[in-house]
Amino acid sequence: MNVLDVLRKSKSPVDVSILVEKLKVNKTTVYRQVEKLLKNNLIIELEFGDGKKRYELKDENHHHHLICNRCGRLEDIKLNEEIIIKDISNKTNFKIESHSLEFFGLCVNCK
Image 1 (cartoon, rainbow, N blue to C red):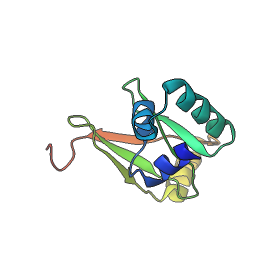
Image 2: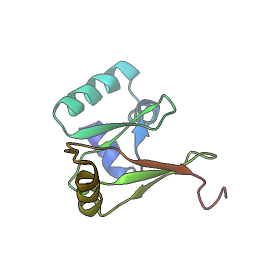
Image 3: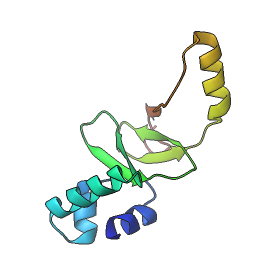
C-alpha cells in the first residue's frame, strides 16, 4: 500500500529509485511490490526511451506524456483519443487494441 500512496501523491510517473528514497526500504522490497501491483493491474509501467522504467497508477483517465529532452520534466496531456483511434482505424483498416504515445521536445523553461 505504501507504493500506491507514493504514486497517488506524485504528479508524474516515478522510478524505483524515487520509491526507495520515499519509502526508506531496500530495492528488492520495492521491486517485489511493483511486480505485484503490475500483476494485479493497479499500476502501469512506462519507458520513455532512456532505459529507465517509471510507474504510475492505472486509472480511467487515460493520458499521454510530454517529456522535456533537456531537463527531463514530465507532464501529462489528455487527447481526444476516440476520434484519433477511429481515424487511424478507418484510414488503415487496422484494429487497434492498445497504444502508447509520448511527445518529446523542450518544456517552457528549456526552450
